[in-house]
Image 1 (tube, rainbow, N blue to C red):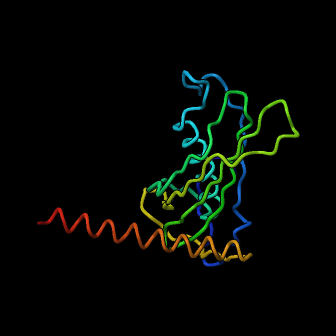
Image 2: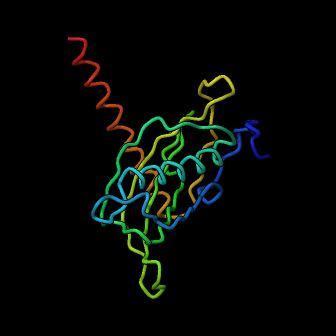
Length: 174
C-alpha cells in the first residue's frame, strides 16, 4: 500500500490505539546549536512527522498539518540522546483531528537512565482527498480514562482556538 493514497471507508470509528505511533532517532551534531543542544525546530519537525503518521493511519489517507496549537519544551536534548516521540489522536471532528505528541530523550550510553519527558505538542491535522479538499475522518473511540481526559482537554483547546479566531476576525473587520 506504500504510496497509495486511497481513502478507506470512514463510517466505522477507530480506537485511540489503532493509529498510535512511536518514532525514534539518535540526535546528531547536525541538529545541534552551539551549546550542544538539539534545536527546538528539529524536535518540532520530528513531532510533526510522528503526528502526520498518526493522522494518516486514523483517517485512512493523506492529511496535512493545519495548526500546531502548542509546543512546550521542558528539558534540553543533547547530541547523542535517543529521542523518542509518542503520538495519538486525542480528538476527531468531521475532517480534522487533534494529535498529541510526547517527546522523551535518553542518554545514548546509559540504559539505566530513565527517559526524560522533554517536550509536548498538540497538532491539528485535516484529512484531504486527491484534489486537496478536506474529507471526512472516522469518529474516535476512546479506550481508557486517560483517553477520555485527553479528548476532553482537546475539546477545550479547540473551543479556545475557535474563540480566538472569532475575536481576531472581529477586530480586523472594525
